[in-house]
Image (cartoon, rainbow, N blue to C red):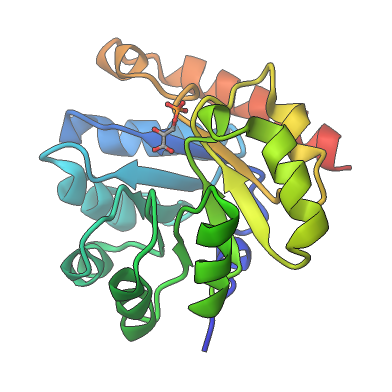
Length: 213
Ligand code: 3PG
């Protein structure tokens, strides 16, 4: 049966999307985010060390809820589950990927940006969706349109989401959380700016909680 992926996110209203180039950054980065009040994070499979990053965080930062993003092949579900993934994010959706999520009993957040893509997801039993790339797919106005025709479908927009437009998205009834890369840049990690990451995370958390209150 279906797993509530937003419940798996533990009420986190903002999900940092992470592109980690150096495995040594994994633990201080995850600790910095948790200290700032963002406990769910998405490690993208866009770098060679991504699986090692997930393993390190799973072993050393138990407070972190570890998601794995940029999953595009069904066999990756098994790999990331073994590494410690607690939820999986894909930029799009196919029946093969939906089945892999079910087979692995993995909370799953796949992408959909058109009405037909949303309907196909519903046909596969999936009503919790990523909306990516949000900014170029009609943004908050498109999601507002979806809220009137797809009651019960909930979204996490990512792609172009920033502090300046977070409220446009989070104030919609069908948006539960937002995600983005602005919280942790490679520059911050390379420079070891862990307290700056904590500050930005805390700011985003406070802003989001204020909008959702
Ligand atoms: C994602 O994988 O969701 C995107 O890379 C996030 O997009 P952003 O860089 O615009 O935040």
